[in-house]
Image 1 (cartoon, rainbow, N blue to C red):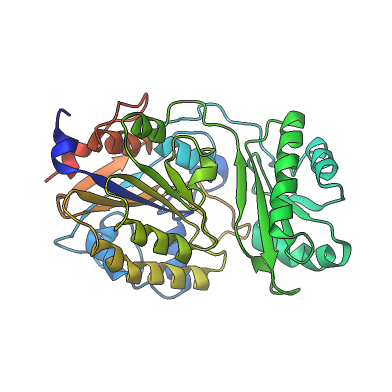
Image 2: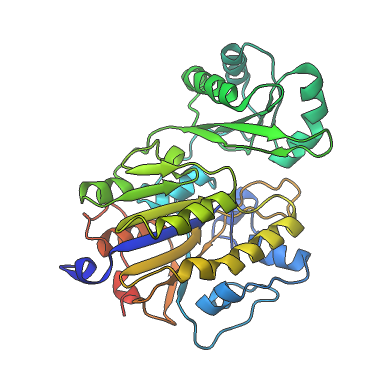
Length: 391
């Protein structure tokens, strides 16, 4: 490791597309996800996807995707990341990528949100809530939106993990007020039950066309171990967070963070940072995929179309990594997170091209690779594959 990062790599851009799975993990059947394949099923639903930029990086080598062709001379490296943590949500996915493995299955809300948690939320909000079931956001807004507008009762739901979502229309509870009330609800509710996360979700629109709007705010417990961000911070690296990265790590070890209301805002912020941030890690979360397959396909194609704008600004010593945190197979009626492998696409001016990084059983390998490339201390978990990336 001596001198490798210092001589070659100054800056890494890590883009995490929320919910972009590419096929079931070996234990997916335990989670009811044996047939899950987010990307392939989106492509099938829309008659094929046009993703020429990711195709050129080698996407077809790791995923069977209608419309995406095999490239004989990829312009980047490619592989798959798996997860060994229990669970299949963003917290488990992001933490494992950062070297923190959740070995024990946390209490979940598979049967709906427990009464003691509902009571705690209502106490903190000072009003009754509706919903409190396991469902996707789209279903809850459709099912309970009109009732919410008429009664003023916030909509509360869960994805089945130890996470509560609290949604309210901006005309009922303004965004800043919702965040503050959810902060109080988080403090009270976690005393009643071992919550992992509570999410404030502002919504807008009219009955029948409600949609998320504005900035979400995630309240999450501290990662229970040393993370990639901690190691980079201790090494004196700049660590920038875009989107919900700040919330997932409780702001720990970030130099600065930039919340983003949309994936477009997050992508624009990331591209802009390439002219301002001279070294370290730019860590971006893209909430890119809506629950509708047609819209998700269009969003992926737009992201792929814009990737060259980012790649053109990469300079010698830069690496760009595209991956995900879990799956969200929209062909399943519940449209909740699914237990899947995620893509690993890597490019940059000094990155080896056409390299198959293979399948990694744990996403912690990526975190270990990043700390090695940027000359930070080794993490407790994960095996670096930096030697395969450098030219």
